[in-house]
Length: 276
Image 1 (cartoon, one colour):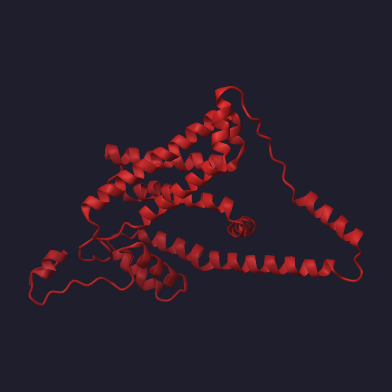
Image 2 (cartoon, one colour):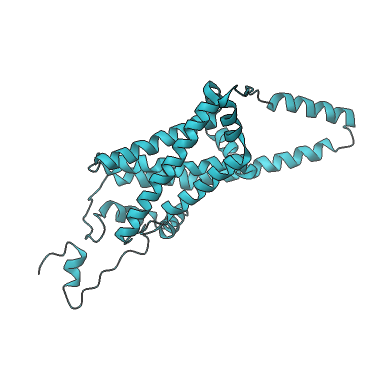
């Protein structure tokens, strides 16, 4: 019997039927479902074994084809199943303690003056100093007003959401012309973010580096540009892991939305607190 290596080899036979595993990463929805199932520790070993044996799209699995995939699944289980669950437990405990503190301050033995003093002490402990950004002079002042305008930030936020949606729309079996269109869109989005970076550097000058969020934005833009440059030059095709890491910089832009979501920011702050 002829050895079956590809989907085409299988479909040559009259009774040949090519089936994918139930847990797969063919698109974002199926990938999220698979990762969620792994987080519940339900059958994650089987998923890991399938990932290790996977050869490529339309290819017959081969035993231990990519043994290094163990690192991906192991790291995900450590962070996804253990770390993230502990994170939400930490958020619940933090909110519980806040409610408890509010109840305590309303007790009979705490006067209004004492409450004010306690609030002042808390404010002094939690307050963080930030450097004041002075508007520049001349033409740069107009650029400064532009990048600091709420509509400008809203436009960038909208672009991030659309860019994320485009990346999430890629799936197994996507048409080549759509793939090319998505590639052009990603390049277009990268140009927009580079323009944002240049405008902020001109408008804010060295004050741009006062904000850690600005430094994060710069790192994401540089990482994205590096990935696009590698694709243009054809560098890194033999190192799929490196290409995946570089492309992951595009997804990191969604983290910028944390600044505008107080509830999500609480989770992120708790994450930093429980990190040790």
